[in-house]
Structures are given as C-alpha cells and as structure tokens.
Length: 441
Image (cartoon, rainbow, N blue to C red):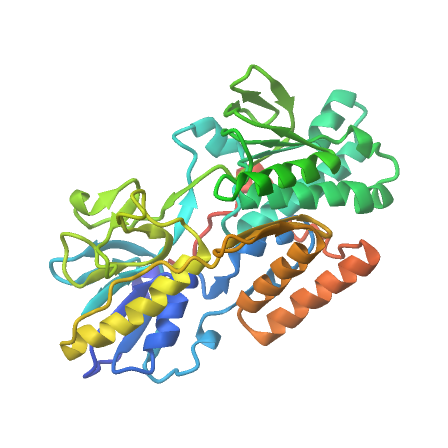
C-alpha cells in the first residue's frame, strides 16, 4: 500500500473528540483517565508502543532488552470502545480550523492535547549532533549498544594501539541522572563483565569520562547527595570533569572547553533536552522551545489546545523557569487535565495544576544510589538503591514487564552478568536508524 492510499479513518461520534499527539507518560496517562468518560479519544504517534525512558540506559548497556521497558499503546488502554490509536506522524496543527494535519491526511478535533515530550538539545553544535549518540528512544539505545560492542570487537582485531584506546574509551556529556547512571553502568561492565568476554584486551586502559558544565553532578539534588554520587563514581574509576563543556567532537576526538582532548569513538550526549514542538501554533505561544501554558495546561493565545509533560512550559511564582522536564510531572499533568476536560465539557470550573514533588533519585551502581524526598529526607547507599529499584518497578507499565525487569535485576545481582550483550543489528553511521519513522508514512 502506497502512502497516497493511506487515510485517517475515525468513526463519527456524538462525544467530543480529544486528539492526543504522543503516547509518552503524559499522553498515555491522560488517555487512561479520560477514555471512560464521555469522550472519543484518538491518539496519534509515530510508534505503536510506550517507552519507559528512565531505563533506556540499561538497554544501551546490555542490562535489559527493549521489550522489557516498552509495551503496545493499544494494550495499555483498558476501555477500547472510545479509544482509537493511529500510527502516523503529525506534520502541523491548524488551530483556526481545529484540524491536525498528518502524514496521511487531516483530522478534526474538539480538544487537542500535545504530549510530544522532548528531544535532544545539541545547543546548535552541528558537529556534535552529527557524531554523538543521543539516548531518548529505543532505537537510539540499540544503536549505542551495538556501537559499544562493535568497538570492543574491533579493538580485539586492531594492531593500532591509539585506535584501540579510542575504541575502548567512552565520553558521556551531562551530569544529570542519565549521565550519572550511564557512567555507573559502564563502569560495572568494565569491572565485572567485559574482561571475561574479551580477555585479550586490557580494560584498565578503558577510560570512562563524565563531563558536566556546572560545578557539581545531579544539580537538581542537594549538594551532599551530589558529592556522594561523584565520590562513588570516582571510586568506580570514572573520570569526572566538572565546570567544563564539550566544544566539539569529530567522531575520534572530543575537544573540551578547558583545552583537554579526549580520544574516543563513542561520545554519548546527555547534556540537555528541548520541547518536541509541532508546527502550526503562533510564535507567541512558544518560549524556550516549549509551549507556554496557563495553570490549566491550555496553550496561551489559542483555544481548545492543551500541552502537557515536557513540551509544556507553565511559569508560576514558585516555578519561574517552568516545571522540570520529568516523568512524574508529565503523569500528574495528564491526570489533572483528564479531570479538567470533564469539568470544562460540563461547564464547571477547572482546577489549576499544582506540582506535587515526589522527590528525586539516581542510581550509581550496585548498592549505590542517592534519594531526595520532598520532606527533606536525604540518604544514599544500599537502602537508597532498593528504594530506586522499587519506585522504578512501580512505574513500569504492565505486570509482565515488571516481572521481566525484576528477574533481570535479580539475576544480574547474583551473577554480575548481563546476558543481553547482543549485536542485533550492526550500527553504521551512514545507515543510522535512530530516527527512522514508520516507513509507510
């Protein structure tokens, strides 16, 4: 079937139509909460699955398989009668006609909810964008896993000692939770697993560098927890470089703002994200690559268009820069918007969204994590590590996925093994599949 033969078939309904763009944390939670109400819910996404993004780094480091942190979007909506899913890319929004323009046609809406999440922000550095590895999607995690394992295979065969070190070395840019957790996972691979797989290589020569542009890691957490995370990583042999930026990367050498040069074939970019915008809304509705929304998550200067999750910028007195781009906030906004749409349709006043801080956490490695609770309680170590595992298992969607992830973690803890060291597809720079959309569209 050609692209021109595809159409958007959505049955007519007497219920108001809510079109949701994106099946991430925010969009999925909204659909789950509103589908049993008096609405027709249509979700549009380029992928037919929901991804638990906080564990993408474990897919990239061979700890988990991708299907253990993902699940079909259709499966996760219990009430199917009023829910429709369509696999497609949204090109733009015509807010005056109240139409969504997609790769296969137009779709009319009564209420539009943009929940497209975020994408990697390279801050205009084209060389880094071309050569670095992002980590926002499952295909990107698989690319990174293949890249790392292929590098080890090449390192075994090369006689060029300088090239061997480039193949072994890994540079991670960004000292937030993703960067810290990646660095810890790679350090454990280097310490416990890779020497057994590749006895010909001297992994004491493998350098894992974590580069952060501010004065400390995990900047959103308390200084004491940041210091503990840095101390744990240094003990694990990670080269932590603070107050430093990466100015360039050509695929072989990373150039730092302090003049240092790091030889590597793998630079992982975890230094920033930006809203994943859809064309069509007026410029005055956008600030800092996110949609400006009011306290009800309605996009400013347009009617009946809402934005939730990472793509929404809600400026308040307590949050002058907007809410952090985190999964718990996306979930909360999805839940609150579901209630508000019901109220709006019934002619009742809507309730403003209020941020409920559930705390923050990051894991560094086996028996090592840091947790910050909203009550002010802060702790690290083994107990924090168990809390981190429990919370992540709680948020993973689907009992099967919870069981598979727990079984993998339990086995890894007992054996120090990661059984997913598979090169499923060879990664080649000129055949980059990390951003391929539905080939039909």
